[in-house]
Image (cartoon, rainbow, N blue to C red):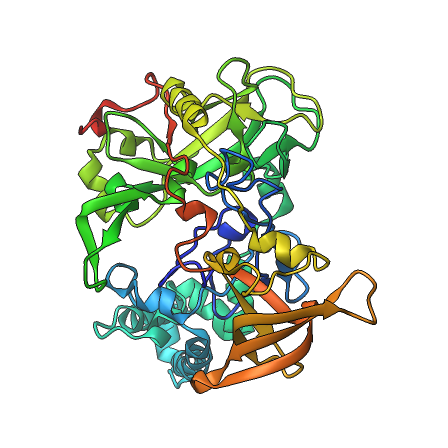
Length: 484
């Protein structure tokens, strides 16, 4: 993804989008995505460039995780530092160590109030129980002074927020108390949890759609097939892409050239600038059927943890400063759905008309070369630049040597059969390495070469790639959001 543009920022949905970050308790690690456009290219499909080829980003447990434990993943330090203006100082890993050491010292101080000298007359006058209650109140007041200290710091933010939690952390350690706070009983999860494995992605049965979502089991009518928390985008214009100025130094906002691919994964309405993008597992793979859909969308009910219904009455400007996600769709089965049946929802009349027009106007790109195809089928003979330089107008290659050093492939100058591989070839390359050092490499096997689209030459940047948001039904869309 880093090669696709000058600066890239990916939006990832699925299980990997759900975990929070806790630098003291991160327990899963995420892998890189796979890439596969399921055979759809600008040379054979009007759907090319209309969906992402990135998929299958997996997460693995980095330690043993008990049932009921919350999953945490490392967001990176910059994620929090960039958001300090509204999130405050979020404790990092070393801050919990400092907090733990501080708790040990505070524990000794609080204990001294109990074990300090006090006379029998004190007991006779106040009573032991009343006296200990008084001491406990003093201890709680001391802790409240500490936790409400006006000069904030990350170690201070790592301390327990209540006196009761602090005394527990003093007794058993801050690690155990943090784990206890991040654990739910199986009974609680059974009652309040959301089922996330009703659907899974596979290659769609819909022509040109790419991937789709399929039922993992029989789902009776009325089943909530999936839940979709929504990231809100108050101004859809931020997804507009613009041409460069003549000097190439910045974007010319008077020359829009298209929309970012994310638009295709958002829900919207013709009367509003607001877009809603679902980030739950599976729902972005749900494709369109305007005639016989088997699910519908509806606002989530009876769960203010994930869906704040009062937001439906707020103006679009409210979302400019709303830094959390508190809107959620439910995808509800309109009829019984069989195991392994593709899940389909109605994207709306406007979307369907726009797609039909796109298909009518589409023309295949001639002599299209897919980097993905070159990377997955090493037996495809590569043309030298002298044979056909136009093949490399939109793609670039990299050579990786035995020491994992990468060099850009400047030219492929020769090709000959590989004597150790009946179906393979060896290549002579001109490569450019660190410091713009040019080298000539001979007899390079295909396995040492990898190809990418040049910046802004990928399928999703092609002029005329289909772009249109999915349409929220008229009866669902709040009047307060109609700002156009």
